[in-house]
Image (cartoon, rainbow, N blue to C red; front, side):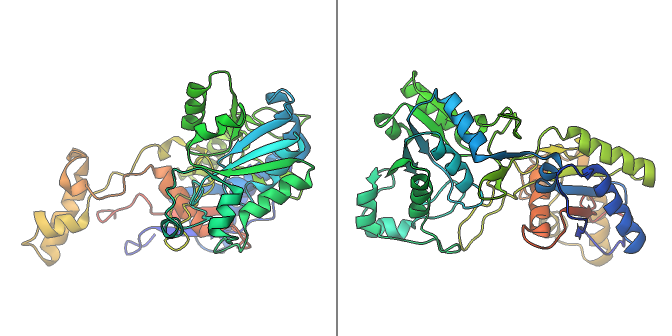
Length: 398
C-alpha cells in the first residue's frame, strides 16, 4: 500500500450464502478474487472480517417460534403466566422471539423500560417525562402511560412499539398486561416466573431478582435455546441473544463454534499468499447515533470469534499532543523526524503517559467490528466480507 495512504476499509462482494455453503472456501476465494481482478494484494497484518449473519446462515443456525415456545415451557415448568422484562424495541430483533414466548403461555406481564430501551430505541424523550413531571424511577400502568403520553411512534420506524408488541402477544391467544418500570424488582409483585430480555445488563438484572426473591424462576434470553430443541439451531453461550428475524416464524441465531473457522482462514491464506492476516467475525458495531440516540449494539458482543492477534487495545500516541507540547518549537522536517523517532520507540513509553492519553480506550475487536459494520451495512450492498488494510500502520510506518 502507498506510504501516503492510511487505513482502508474495503467491502468485498461474494455469492449469496445459504445453509450448508462452505463459508471458509467462499471467504478465501472472494479475497483471492479481488487480488486477481481488482489489484488489491494482501499485506501482513491486514484484517479479513466476515459478518456474523452469513456465518450463521451457512451453519444453518435457525430456530422456529415452536422451538422457542418448547424451550420456554421447559424452562418455566409449563407455567401459564410469565413476565417478560426489558426487551429492546425492534421488529428484527425481538418480534419473532416474542411470538414464540407468547405461544408458550396464557398470560404475559410485559415490563418495558422507559423512556428508551437499553440500546437507545425511544418510546419517549426525557423532555416528554419532564413535561409531565414524571420521574423515570416511577412505575406506570398502560392506562397511566396512555393518559400521559398518548400514542407515540418511533422516529425512524414510525411504529408504536407498545401497541406492536401487545398485538403480537394477543395474536397468539395470550393475554397481556403492560407496565413501565426501570426497576427489575417491581415485577416481583406480579409473578415469580421472569424472563429478562436485556442484553448487556442481563447478569445484573438476574442477580437483583434472585437476591430479592430467591425462589423466583429467572432466565435470560441467553439461556433460551442455549441447547438444541427438536433439532433446532442454538447458541450455547448466548442463546437467543444476537438473533435476527429470518421469516414470520423463524429466527437466525448468532453463529456458534467458529474459532476453527477464523483460524483456518488465517492459515490457508498464509499458505496461499504468504501473508499473515488476522480474521474476525463481526456483528453490530458499538457506536451511538447522535440523532436517534440509538447505541446500535443489539448483539451480545461486537465480535464473537477472532484470531489471537486481535486481542488487546490500541497502542497509540497522540500526535497532536506531541506537536503542541513535546515538540512545540520544531517545524517541518525536524518535527516529522522527532515524531517519527518517538513513535518508533513508543513501546518504551508508559501507558499512563500524557502522550498516550486521549487515544480510544477500547478493544481492538470493538473498534474494528464497528468499522466493518459501517462498511458493510445491513441492506443490499452485498459485501458481507470486509478487508481492512493498514490498520496497524502509523506515521512512522514505511
